[in-house]
Amino acid sequence: MNDCIFCKIVKGEIPCNKVYEDKNVLAFLDISPVNIGHSLVVPKKHYVNIYETPEDILIEMMKAVKKISHAIKNGLQADGINVNMNNDPAAGQVVFHSHIHVIPRIANDGFGPWHSKRPYKEGEKELVVQKIIQAL
Ligand code: 5GP
Ligand code: ZN
Picture 1 (cartoon, rainbow, N blue to C red):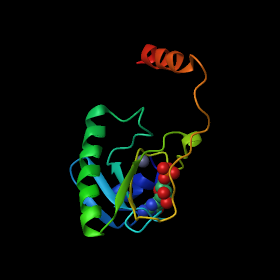
Picture 2: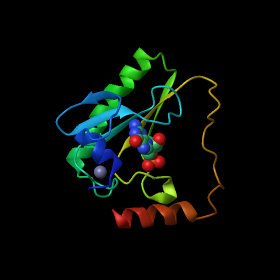
Picture 3: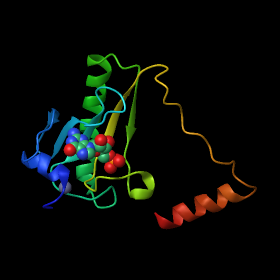
């Protein structure tokens, strides 16, 4: 992918602040951190999102996420960690190279929990579960 910013970072054409690397995965500081230490875990090969990323590569990404989570918690004295992946613009994805955010959280840092939009209506839960299971 010629114009993909994360491919350019993987190739070393654009600098990054690397925190972890192995055969399949690179992790580096997010340029606009939610909190200090906010890191991104990306596959070295270009995949757009979770749907395209092969299972074995997702496993490698999650192994790196776990390592980095421990390192951020212990090394930066984070009180908590959010692990997040945005897929598709509707979910907030702006860089279309698969990546997982590892975000240190500090007690009372002002980023509250997500809020529920509305409760389920009568019978809705069962219908939703049925639709998900049928699509598996
Ligand atoms: P998304 O919204 O697609 O899940 O997140 C993309 C993330 O990539 C954003 O948090 C953004 O700050 C980060 N980002 C975008 N361009 C660059 C870059 O050139 N270098 C680094 N290190 N992070 C970037
Ligand atoms: Zn890419």
